[in-house]
Length: 246
Image 1 (cartoon, rainbow, N blue to C red):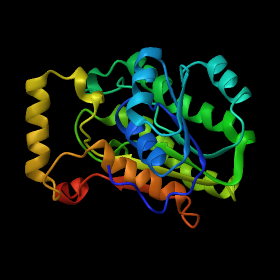
Image 2 (image 1 turned 135 degrees about the vertical axis):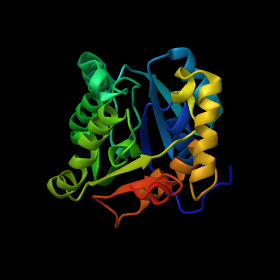
Image 3 (image 1 turned 90 degrees about the vertical axis):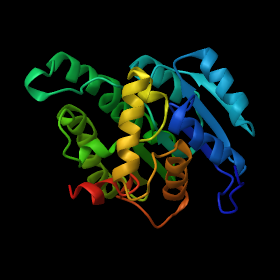
């Protein structure tokens, strides 16, 4: 990874930083000299990620769905310049007529409520001119069958960005909305189905490829470190919405 030249030496916390987009974001911050803390539920995965990320990086085991774990983390966190909330889940997808509403509730419990609870708990510890970046998803503004539940979860987070940016100013609040990114999130889908899906994305997306975690990480670091950007939901989707006209 090329070392960035415009990332200030700051204290950064990446919630959900032991794999995928979170890990790539932590690595980009660390490459620029930031002090980075990553969190994750699995101590083994967290320890391995800290080694891969390198730099001035430490890990803190935390279940983002646990209010007690969140409170314990911030009780010892110290001041934070940039907070990236990359915690997520996989529940809540499927045809609406057959959608298990308990499954949809589990989707909110895995992503919406943890992101909101983390942000609220973090407020006393964020520097006044720092930033928070939520990681949502392109499903919030797409129109693909079977994604109404995911659209509701991510759309709820997207909808909070603009009012929070005003209410919490000068703290900056943004979100990055990834499209199809090749991360472990897709491992739940059988390999042949995943390959077919990715081939369809390649064929119909202007960028001509599936996204990589590093693509999203670059957008996150850019939003976090640009002191004149707030209240933005930034699409990182390779032009997918242009291709579909949705």
